[in-house]
Image (cartoon, rainbow, N blue to C red; front, side, top):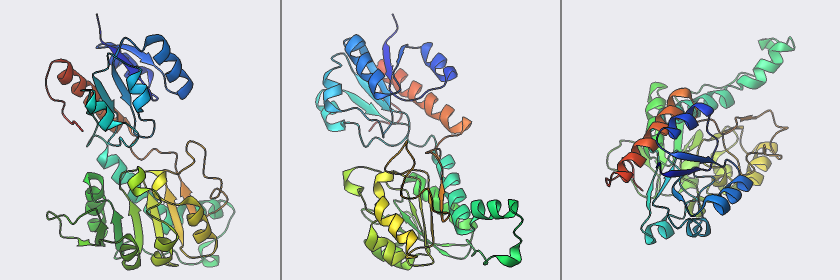
Length: 310
């Protein structure tokens, strides 16, 4: 008999079929389906696959008495009750490292798109507006890039920045000994130093509105901010006000507090580039994440330590 897997996020038919070779898959990609699945199948579920934004609460964990493994498909796990799970002897793992390159690529795509105003220029070009009627968009290269969160993804963003001959600074909970970049203990100080900010820090209560009105003021009228981390890290109302009054020049957001609904405060602003939380999505990245989950689960069920335990 196959172990029972409860999957709480969108999965393609192909990936569900891949998982079905090892598991009885119960697919519940929204809150209503998840509640129904736990009521009907909760006593049989041994593995849960989720994502950081969806998570798995302490109450949900307690509704699954046979649960022995919780996996986050990506790197984020901010809404998984990790301490509660571990107190029950449940192993928690994630997909760290499986989509880092994809996210870093997308971060730079958003940075170039907002700094150079590419979506706005595309629209104007289609209207017949020629370059001589437009202000000059600034360079990305040779500027100062501040990275909030220099984990594995942040380091890959920094590596790409070097290709643009940028100066890199960063903010972390503590300085890293393995990088040559300038460390800032304070986010506002990093913003004041930087031309552009990229948010790459984990979500959760500890980083809620880390980028606020004060930080945006410090970034200044030529500044741009990019977020490929979690929407909760940026104060959306403060960002909207900063963009409307010219406190900063632009923003590129793959994540926002209102998702999956678009951020109502920002959608009418042509200084904002929006994408629908796809920074970590590519055929290669998603397949790697699914493969990592299956290997984490295989090892756990064989009595071994997962590849990427939390």
